[in-house]
Image 1: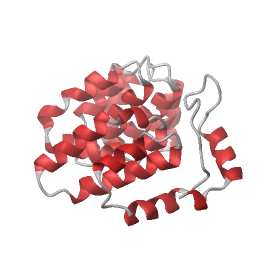
Image 2 (image 1 turned 45 degrees about the vertical axis):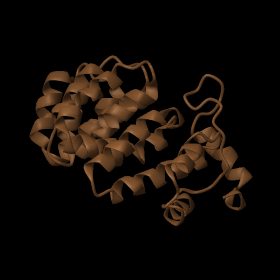
Image 3 (image 1 turned 180 degrees about the vertical axis):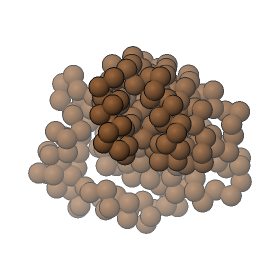
Length: 226
């Protein structure tokens, strides 16, 4: 993997993913390897053991952690039995310390935890526990996992999470909530409008802008002026 590294690109990615002191990605390191290359490597090493995947996810370099997560996604998608899926979800949560930037969350959580919650509604209460975490990435895991439910026409969880996170201080959470509300609107615009009619004035501005992105201009302006 090191032969694919690009120092200049790594420096750029360090700025892009906010790795400076006090920023959300503080201390993260980048090799400068593109996502398509990482995906190709994940496909090549899809049969790696979970022990090896754990080592990858604990690595100090961002792209190597992503490689481990993409291999794990592949394993989950290939799993035939529910006990296999359950074991992989447990492994995912146990190793989430390495899932510590927004792309690492977004490229993995809904395909693993989100899919498992779609299959197991009785487990969805865990979302609310994560949404109350002081850890930014735990909260983002909860929100972005709901893509799997939204695509299945199930909106109860994202609506409840959006309410719970109205006062979240992190911009990355405002973006995540707004993104999921927008996805909900793609499936059912009436449900989105009903939510916005009640909560638009309390949603963080960034979340609102994301949520209304696909609505007609007249409606977007109405919600923004509220």
